Amino acid sequence: MKLNKKTKMTIDTINISFANKRLSTSELLLFILTLPVLVLFIGQLVHFSGMSKRSVSKTNGLTIGSASSIQTLNPSEYDEWGSLFIGNHIYPRLLQDERSDRSIAFGKISKRSCVDTTSNRCLRERLTITISEMKSCAGIKINAKIIKKELAIILLKKNWLIPEWSFCPSNIDSEICLEVKNPDDIDRRLRSVYFRFGWSTDQPKSEIKGIAPYCFKNISYDHDGINSGTLVSAENRFPELKFISSMKSTDQVDIALYGSENLLNKTKKKLLVHTPAAYYLISSTKSINPQDLPWNFLESQNLIKTFLKSENLTIGDGDEFNNIIPKGEASFIDKSLGKNNTALTFLIPDYFHNCEILAQQLNKKWRQIGFLNAVSQCEDISKFIPERVIANTKKWDGFISPITPGGYFRNAIGLEYLSKTSNESWIRGVEKTEDYFFRLGLAQTFIVTSTRICNVLPNPMGLSDLLISDLELCN
Image (cartoon, rainbow, N blue to C red; front, top):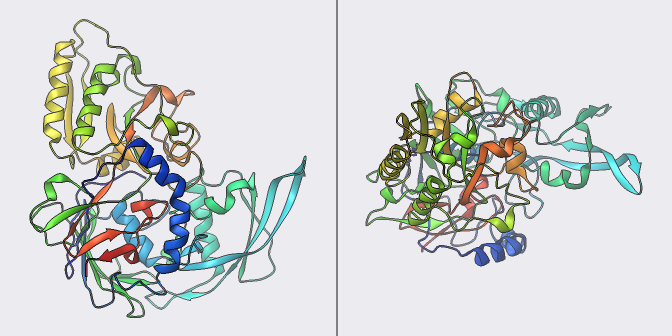
């Protein structure tokens, strides 16, 4: 999922941010290799059923800030950290987290059988998922029938999650029968951050949404979506969370989900959040030849890489992870094309600190090599991507965006965003998508917090799967 831009939050007082420490490539690799062990250990200490002594308790109110208004709380559609944070707290998973019981789930796999075997390998598996009924915050019973309908919507919209799936007959009302192809990593795929359920019963403009462990109340809307609201513990066990959409250093928030240097002051700090993510340069398949686009030239990319490193946004190229985080091939040696009058627009996320400086450097560089009408500018990509790239109705040329995977299985980033077969791909209509993207570096993600929060406990998906119980107070 992509990162968003303008977040604003207000409840009692707790803020989140990234730490100053930058990880080396070797440190990052060590962290990734040891993370499952860490999560297993931490899962025994901190989860919704019992927080550690230093974790946020129900007596602490928090204000959560996001980069922009929440456009949707439908997991088949949302794709940024603000929506994910709220969704993680109000809609239970399909299956329990396999590493700990840090979250609530509707179902469990009660039976599995192979229906197609070749050479001692299962090619197609049948899963029986038993669903426990829950009641929504609006008093609606959420049963297996509703879960099955929502599961179909998610799988059809996000066709990259579980290819060639099908429902199979079940005679028990509380069960869902699902057949899947090549089931080697199906348990991980079924725990994608998008598999949250119970959302279809919420009305579009309702003032209360959710199921558990929180109810989302006092919701306020603007022309972009939800701009504020309050997360209230369904059983009064957890702290009240106030959500706002803003990106100002003067906002009295405890957690700013989109870390930016310009949010820091004497009362705020940044905390590193280990999130699998990378910054990408994306070009449109409807623009000119990717080999002739100025941002795909090596010198321009080196300029961008230098900027990202200087702003502590990246921690290395990530070539060690090419098999799980695709690199792309849209990087070409600079060449002179003479005077080029083609109108081109290249977008930089406007939440970057010193974004305008990078835009000016690129524009100067491009004028020097003959691109008279190529313009680099700062813009809210959290709105641009769904409105222009996903909708695919208006012309666009290129942009920079961080991308996080929708699940902790191999090549989740490539399958969702960079594949010619994905319904949600940013690169469409070509056989070789690699010519239209290039990885600029591994992202170093952080959040900005108040001084009351000292640490963020790790999980494999980082900010994409952040829960309030992952926070540790300083006292």
